[in-house]
Image (cartoon, rainbow, N blue to C red; front, side):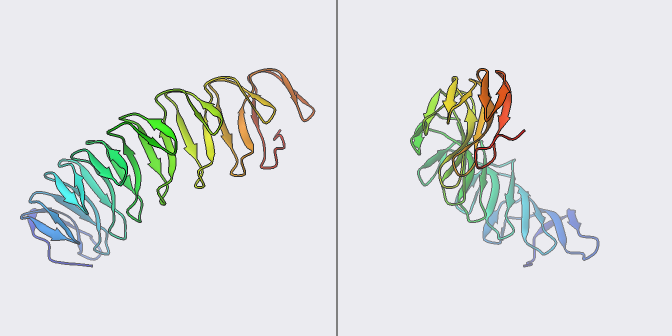
Length: 233
């Protein structure tokens, strides 16, 4: 996809093999692939002519998203907005997102990563302003930071740590807020624990001496299990 782009001649770079436009600084405002870019914006293209990334000269609305001037914007190969920094607090559906934060989108246009501008609850988890959150392409929560100790699916998770989820919403990994027994395995507070997609414990660190499947293990020993719950030597 190619069109005539109004470039400042002294700020125009082409691909050496094809002569197609690679980078230019706009001499006037221009609508490029549905986005109205202001004068002075530096535009970068893939060799096939599609938008790759831009350095915005001023705050600009890109595909309905308020993007911060002076910051880079990136696009997916299908033309969807990929990465930007928000010029103001903005709500994507039910998710209030913070101005100035790095905001990332999936190829289908759904939110991938943002920082919260307000206190909200997502999938039963209370989250504070400034929290770093990530989503799967279908809108389900994939990861977030915790501001306080939080019990998630019966797992006591530690404040100021990160938790992860599988696409079906099941708990994937997190840091324990206290010693906790998971399927007869005594796990240590402050250790990272993680699970297989079938819900079985995949790994952690022991909170006390214990015999697991005939193997004597001391407190603090890291342990790993396969998807059937068998200890991995």
